[in-house]
Image 1 (tube, rainbow, N blue to C red):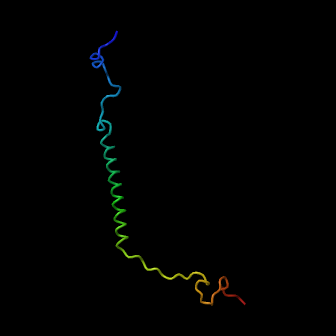
Image 2 (cartoon, helix red, strand yellow):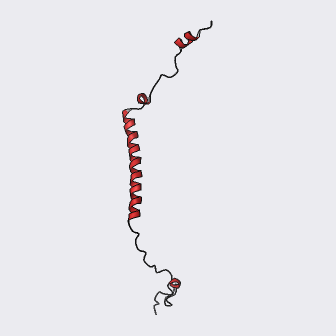
Image 3 (cartoon, rainbow, N blue to C red):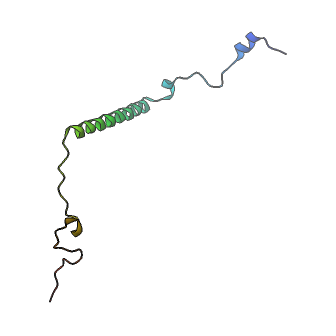
Length: 87
């Protein structure tokens, strides 16, 4: 026996009830999610503040490095022969 369209609409039951995210997500989960979002925003702001600080602060002076005897070119110390000898 064939049903009319009106009868089919009247008898139709959806497989899943109409639910919103507010019905599914608990207040604790929502608070945790908001805390995670805020933490991400804070980390990004901290990173930006660090970049601004690095931009403002001068770089430290670079001091001369000793390097090897050949790079010093002082003609005194030779590589591997600077240790004292016991007689």
